[in-house]
Image (cartoon, rainbow, N blue to C red; front, side):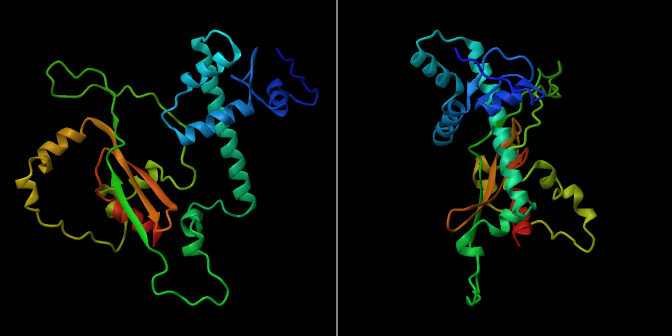
Length: 260
């Protein structure tokens, strides 16, 4: 049991706790705290092994301390970890602002030193940068809904819990930025006329898993069908986006427009 000093210059006790190297579990009243070092340890473990959940980590801490595990400890550590991530992102944002690197496309234009940094007197290359862009549908997420209507003709309402957190930093495109390129928004782009759709490929008739009726039924269960990313040939991440309720419809066009 440690007693954390509270400074008279701080309006809130939590400010004093953070100054002393500890994170609170809630905004106001806190009877227990967790150290920054503990949360930072879990953060590094999670970055190397994303399958490591908070509960087994907390159970291991309880074993080291010789105390009985309680479910509320996992909830408290989870809240402290969310706060830690917010603090780290806030510090990184202030650093980028101080360096003038806070624009929406700075990372895309300066992320790879090998391709995008030019030395004085360097000859201009015919091909400055090689990129690889592709999607992957292994990271799907089910769309949770209430039971369907009695006649079975309509789906039940969504029961997803709203999550206002924004992750991914400046390399993860948010859904609002992607929706601007939807087919329903094409009329807002003056002077641009979409090309006619490509002719139907014979593979759809020969392979049953490619038929539109099967793909619509399969992907209709998911809220997110996967991710789509762009990478430099030196393995630097340029941009990422979620494929929400769609396949790889316009993501190639979106990424090329952002990168060019």
